[in-house]
Image (tube, rainbow, N blue to C red):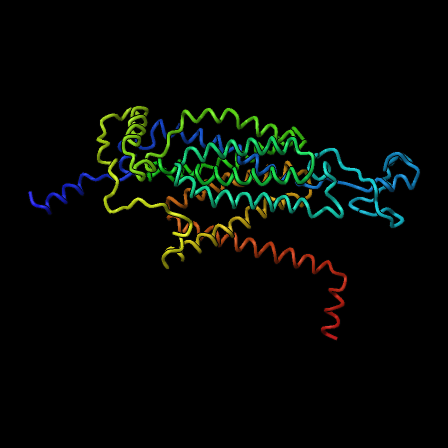
Length: 419
């Protein structure tokens, strides 16, 4: 046998990770079980992130000092069978212009705002807490990739569950807004960790044909609808965090169900451990006639080295891809978090508004999944961004025009223009 023939034979015997996934059952019983549990675990992140919208929402409030000016024990009383409110709503001053010393809050919604009196000269604090929370997400996203590259996918993912459970307990026992802000930061860190490693681990055990549907299943909007119901029933920001922390506890038992990524073991030259995982998956999927040795060989042209965030900017091609991807994620974050926190400004019941916001995500995500399989990732992504751009411009123009038309000087300016 010549060297050329031997090389051809070796090439034929090589098998990639996607092919070995297909050989051990493809989208089999193991992948279905793993996907269901992984998406159920995401409820901890959804409740923690969606909770920040409720926790920092301002309930209806008023200056109770006005009642004292009228020698009343409460702000409202009945006159001629009609309830009359003597207190000014959303005012930091009394009717005579003095600083308000006592405030009243609508007890239909208990949040950190009325818990720590974050109004008037402290009304910047809720936005600060949300910014700290988002900074935690960014920090978790940045370091989770490096950590999961060094220590595998499984341990960082479960560490994120522990972090979020502890952070929600810290928020439940908060005695000041600074303590709650610290809890919000670590909730963001844990969520950033989980979302990064969760999608990575699911992708590495999913066949290419089903990867979009497995990773993109609309579990988040479904869980958002459930959160709306839970938050409406509890009506208290502390108990929402307590329930979230308690829910995280049983998911720690799934440590015994989730394996480490066999691809990570192969990349770190640990074929024995990778083989054990593949055999376990194959047995669960009832596909035992597989030659694992072909898939457990580390490519000879690779070198053992540790990659860092700086490797994303080593070449012009990587710089271009990294910057464009970062810009896309930045725009996505602005839209998604902006819309989510914008729920606080809508009229009506905040829980019902959040339910409607989450409900719209179910069909839109299903449509997006179909588009990706039909037209590819890039075309679908561009289409979605164009739709968001058109919608954003439309809403901005309508709102700006509406405010301008309400200006009393509008018609006067028109008159002066033609005068």
